[in-house]
Amino acid sequence: MSQKYILSCNQCNYSSEFKIGKSSNQEAWIEKLKVQIRENRFGEETRLFLENHPDVKINAFWAVYTCPSCGRIRQRVRMRMESAEKSFAYRNYCDDCGARMAQVSDIMHVHCPSCKQPLIVETF
Ligand SMILES: [Zn+2]
Ligand SMILES: [Zn+2]
Image 1 (cartoon, helix red, strand yellow):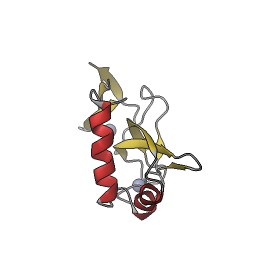
Image 2 (cartoon, helix red, strand yellow):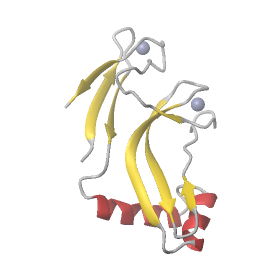
Image 3 (cartoon, protein in one colour):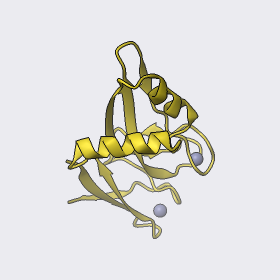
Image 4 (cartoon, helix red, strand yellow):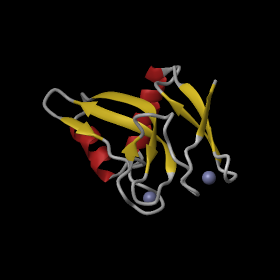
């Protein structure tokens, strides 16, 4: 199950909700991800890996990513595909500036994308 977090800034009006963890119905979610990969929603490289390794096992969970370049915070899928012979790690890129995003390791210490203040974290 995923855990929900609300990140908000007390200096500006930034507030956003995120979830971290696996889906409550992980098997169905993985099947849905496979469909989205085939629709090319995770990029060409990811689509080809699945196409070339139909035996693949997908490990995925919801994660929070930040952009080291523009500071945006985004809800993304952390995904790894393992086939008998090869593995593939999906990389998340920023929609706004194209930089490779980094997974947030500690949700309690994230800074506001607008004013750079430490964000207040509520969990429920
Ligand atoms: Zn702020
Ligand atoms: Zn960016």
